[in-house]
Length: 223
Length: 334
Image (cartoon, rainbow over all chains, first blue to last red; front, side):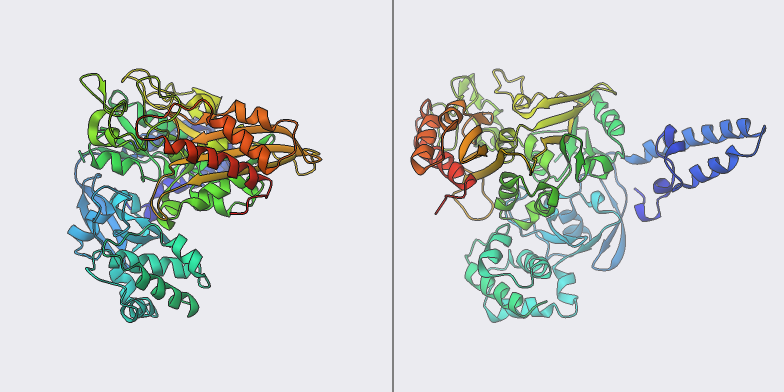
C-alpha cells in the first residue's frame, strides 16, 4: 500500500469521461492542449487513451491490497513508520505490538465496547480496535504517549494525578486521550456535557468521579 | 479474525465491482463499529473487505430538488453539525443520544441502518434465528432484550438500527446500488427491512454485492401551513455505551394546533423497525394533549406479544411513544 499523500491517483482523471470534468487533473490538461492542435491529434489522443486505460487498470490493482503483508506507512505522534502488515491488522495491534506504544490497549476484546484503545486520528477520537492500520495511511495518529509528549497537555495528565483518576490503569491511557480530544473540542464544557462526551470510555474500577473532576478542571482551564 | 483483502474503491461502480469478487463473499466497511465486532467474533469471514469511506459521493449531506440526500458514509457528528438537517429534530436527537465521541466520529448512517442485531444468541454464533437443532433459544430462554412485536415467526431478535425508526417516520427512502453494475434502486426505508422466516434470510433486502449509498429525506417547507414536527425518545439502561431497550420516533404535521399527518415508529421492539398505524390514527385530526399522547401510546402497544422475560418492555415502549409525541410538540417535562 502506498502513501496517498504521494499518490498520483488524485490528479489522474478517474473515469473515461473525465475529459469534461474540468482542468484539475494533469491528464485533462494534456488533452485540452492536444484538442486544439490539428490532424495529428486523433492518433495521439488514441495513444493517450490507451495509456489511460492502462493507468486505470493499474489503479484498480493498487486499490486492492492482497491478504498478505503489505507496506503500510503510519504517521504516529509526528513520526513516520513503515511496517509490513496484513490488511486485517487493526490500528490498535499495529500501535501496541509493532510500535510498542503500549498505552493503546485492547481491553474489551470485542471492538467498540470499552474505549481503552482510543487514539486521535486526524483530530478525531476513534476506537483503534475498530480501525484497520491500513485505513489510517496518510492520516495523523496520536496515542496517549503522544499526548503526554505534547506541550501544554501535561495539564490533562496532571489533572488525572491530582484527582486520583486512575486505579488499575488499564483504561487510563484511553481516558487521557479521550479527555484531551474532548477538551480540545469543548474547552468550556460543563459536567453534563463532559459525562456525555466521555460516555464511550469504561472504567471497571469505577474511578469515574476522579476522571470527571480531572475533565472539569481541564475544561475550566482551557486547553 | 481471518485474513482478508482490503479494497479501497473511489467510485460507487468500483465498489460494486470489488464487492462482486470471491462470489460475493465480501463485506462493506464504513465506520467499522459493527463490522469489527462481527469479524473478531468470527461471525463473518469475508474474503475481501471493501472500505467505502474514500468514495466522495457517499460523504456528506446535499440538497436535491425534492429533499436531502445523506451519504451512507456520513458520520454521526456530521449529522449533528449539518445546518441542512436542523429541521429534522428527531435525527439530530438520535445522533446526540450516542453518548460516545468515538462512535459519533466513526459511526455512519449507512452502518447504523445495516447494523446486525445485538441478540446475544446471534452474537455467540447461534445464527440470526438463534437456534439449536431447530429449536429457538430465545423463545424459552433469556429473552429480556428480545422482541415484543413481530415475534410469532422464528426471529426473536430486535432490529438494532437507531436511526431507522426516525427516518421511516420522516418517509425516508434508501438508495441501493448493485449487484449488477448499473443497478440502482430507491425504496422506502420501511421495505428495506426483513423479518427473516428462514436462516437463509438476513435482516435487510441487501444481496451480496449490493450496498446502501444514500438516504433520501423529503424536503421540509418552512413556509408550509402544516408545520413538520418530530422527536425521538430512546430508553437506555446505561449512560454510555449501550443500546436502547425500546425507542419511539414520531413525525407530526400540525396545522392550527391540529395533527394533520402522523407517523409513529418504534425501534428495538421487533425484528424490524415497527410502524404503528394504530398510534398514528389516534393522533389524526386531534390536538396533542397529555391524554391524547397516552391514548396513542396505549394503542401502539395494545397488540404486543411479549416473551417470557420481557413484559417490562411493553411499559417502556408505551412510555417511549408517549414521550416522543409530547417531545415533538415541546410538551415533555421530564
